[in-house]
Image (cartoon, rainbow, N blue to C red; front, side, top):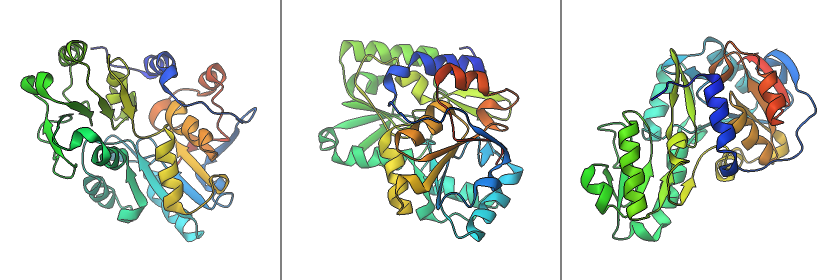
Length: 296
């Protein structure tokens, strides 16, 4: 499987554009600023992506801890809205604390939690079996219903599939899932719509990349889909126009924020666009952020 770079990732987002929400009201051009400190006073609430804003892979971004402290000192509200779904939210929260962030449990919303709420209300959860795709040995006990790690038997027998993470997911396993769904279509819940994620050594393919090609109905939870942004605004107790979505990706963070009616800020020096000028990509898509900041 080809390891993606920024151009591969961008092309992939363009190819699956029909799955994504629509938005209007983008500015004609972004304001370019050195860091997010310049917009602290403009908004009452900050919705923060994790990968590319707080961390890159397992490494914390040096300016991020200081920026969170600055936002708090200004009396602003904040929430982390992450598409990371491989592990329970408590695991992510503990990781943030190790890195020096002081987020409370109420300040972290994971797309896994949004998918779990849908799962709890899904008719198949009453008596059915969901096959979970994710890292080997990852915990599943926090999820409602009968959720089991996928195996060859569940490819045939499961009543539905839950895509949580793509670590260890190969082209061969993807082909087997496609064949199983072609033989017997079943619903798929994708708890991470990301196509790629930035790591210390490059990008990795994420569940959204694989889920977009499945021959079955797929329900997505996480950015850029509206339920995720609405959950963040509800947690902030603010109207959309008083909040800003801060992220490193045009097709998840900027699109999702604008579709929800929020301000948008693209962090270009970390994550998706690190080492690249984002303007050619912005012009190609029309997904124009209000602000481009070099660093968090």
